[in-house]
Structure formats: C-alpha cells, structure tokens
Amino acid sequence: MKLLATMAFATLAVAGTASAVPVFTAGGTTVAGQGLVSSVAGATTIDFNSGILPANYTDGSLFTGTDGNHAAPPGDTSLYLSAGISSDQHTPVTATFNGGLSYFGFYMGSPDTYNSVTYTFADHTSTTLTGTQLATLAGDLPNGNQAVGLYVNAFAGAGSKITSIAFASGQNAFETDNHAFISAVPEPETYGMLLAGLGMMGFMLRRKS
Image (cartoon, rainbow, N blue to C red):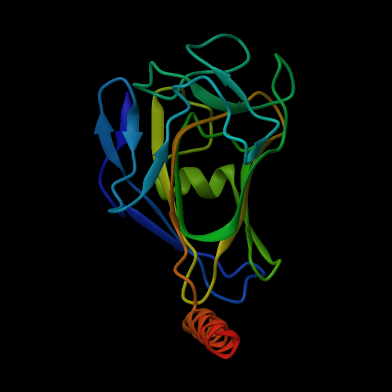
C-alpha cells in the first residue's frame, strides 16, 4: 500500500480558463481506518461516515469495501464517495459551495486515466485535472493500482474562489473520501459595502427615533 503522506510532494499550477492561477499539491496526514486526511490548518472535513450525503452534493453514492465496480482507497475502511457508470453510481458527482472556497482537498484511490475532477470558480471559469495529472502529483501512473492513494489539495489563488467541484469517471470508478474545505474570506470591498450598509441602517434608525 502506497500513501502519499508528505505535504507538497508535487505541485501543479494550472492556468486553465480561470483568471487566477490555482495551485494543486499532493500530500496529507495518515489516519488509521481513514487513509489520508487534509494537512491544511483550519480545514473542515467531510468524511461521509454519517451515511448521509451532504445537501450540497448531487448524484453521489456512498460505499464501503471493494467489489468489481468500486474499490476503497488504501487504508480506508469507512464510507467513501464514488463516481461511476453502474452499481448505483453516477457521473459526475458535484459538490457546490455557493459562498466560495479558498481551498478544497480530497483523498482518492487507484487513479485512472478516465478519472477527472473539474473546479469551477466564482467568475464561471474552470480548470480540469485528468487522471493522468492527478497521478503525476503523487509520482505515480494512472493505471488503477488499488494500492495507490493520494491526497489532492487545490488552492484557488489570490482573488479567486472555488464554487464547485465535479468528480467524473468514464468507467468504474472514481473513489474519494475525506473532502476538506476552507471558506473564502470576503474581499475588502465586501466588508466596505457591509459596513456602509450598517451605517445607513444606523442613520435611518436615528432619523426615525
């Protein structure tokens, strides 16, 4: 079993069609029974262990273990999310974050050429990583080796926000777990507008009193 547990073992900057350049790294922290989790400080993790798909996820199916249609990521004995074309799987599986994220990470197993993940940004542009690019982050081949697992980190870049992540697979399957995210900090002008609005409310209340 090969887990990439060293943060930033490899880094990939992909311009895609986004206005800011997102940065992708591989590396996480090993946790018994979970495989790899995010090493990024302040991240909130979705581990799917409740057995209920979060409301902001569409078309996802949860599984445990390994069969002919999906395989648990290495070291992961818990529930995981899978995208595929049969066995109650769907593609793509999309996670939407309307407020935007500065960071999103996920654990994946057995990278294949037919896997891909697409990040959409607040300006409606997007960047797609192929299964080959994902495997390259870990220094591996996209050959479906079920002993290979890696944690993929995406950083939106200055002034940019990730608003959705779509996991797609042309065959069975694309298995992920331990999704982690950090909400984007509002831009300074957003704070300015908020403060201006609060000031106007205070002015109106004073006039009314």
